[in-house]
Image (cartoon, rainbow, N blue to C red):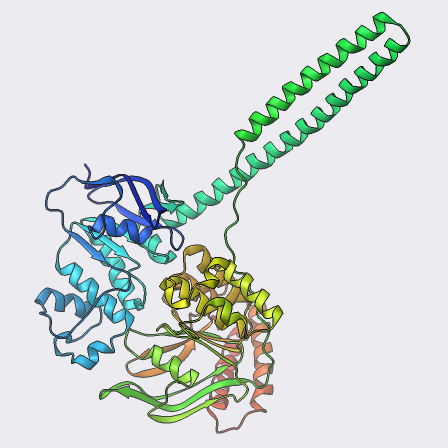
Length: 561
């Protein structure tokens, strides 16, 4: 039984083919993840299925009458205070963490975060009880509560699902089949994203082995052809020698031998041509983002600190009575529900906003790089080439290489930035930021509009970054691989804590050695800070805790520090 069928769909823009004979079926309960590079046509395909675009060729066949499709557009949902709010919509909004939406005033709607807008759009879609959900990047800007809710709802959703996402964790949780859109065509993989990645890696290894085997065979044939031609030439030379010597039998013998070798050479040439025409293509290289970010110069242990900080707007407190500090070199995840003040806190760090109350201190030597969630371009009317003129020659070459590895080709450098797509502008902005080599890097949803390969490349780049990183990001894979600490905003308070509890299965002797080393380091650090400072208090608390753990280990117990 089928729900709908895509039959040889084609779509072009400005005579450039985007979709080329797309064909696949969706069943009533299929869970399908649609993946592909930026610009590969995923949103175009979603819009065709949702009825917002028409294909140039081919057809979309619906096997169920009055099929209800719930379509979540990517970043284009509008919200306003004048709409009606059914009870089911309000109930869903509340489950997503949005309280009393019906009481929101115009200013509250205007200042709704990207995550809040996505939640409201999801609540509208769920209120329609669709048979098919088409979700285009549904986790963009969603907080952990929203993502957890969405995963559970999709697992229990009785209809069909087609989801476009670059969130690896999310795809693993909700999809049972993967469609890869590449070069205008789809390839079907019968599993979730992890299955797809393993299968692609296996295919690439198989392709590489076949390619290398054929290259060896081609090389061997070329050597044999050269050798056979040399033998044929040698036969002709000997035949001419015998002819000059008037030795008729010898001349014919070598002539016949040369002709035989020439036939053998021609046969091998045909084999080589046939092998070359049907040969396995060279395995392509995935675009990588290997950035060698310069190590910032160390000018002190702390880089930023807030004491008794408070911030709010429209009579609503985001956080209050909050104190913490960040150390140089720390990689910190900024976490909390949508609308709690994460983006606001990043703006305070960057100097674009101020606390309402409390003290904010930033190291005078800090070189800040800030990628906000809202789009900000150096000068929107300029081209990338014009912006390059402000940098030294070696920086220009580095920047062009970096852009290329982010899928931003040289041809885009001559187009005004305001004319580029949002994803292209976002990538340019990220590269422009990294070019300045900041030692305090503030990233607000840096993976938005980055495809899977570029996300993995960014992950490798940020792992090599040795400055201080504060990041708002709902890509769990990226956060878990990069960050060791978190600033958690909940119940109108900011708390700094480890990202996750350390787990160790090491023997007690090794635990004791690590603890002794850390205790010695803390004792040295305590002598370098003021006794009444927040830093001293936190170091002292850690010292007391480690001393207690050391006692327990020495007593024969083995707790986790």
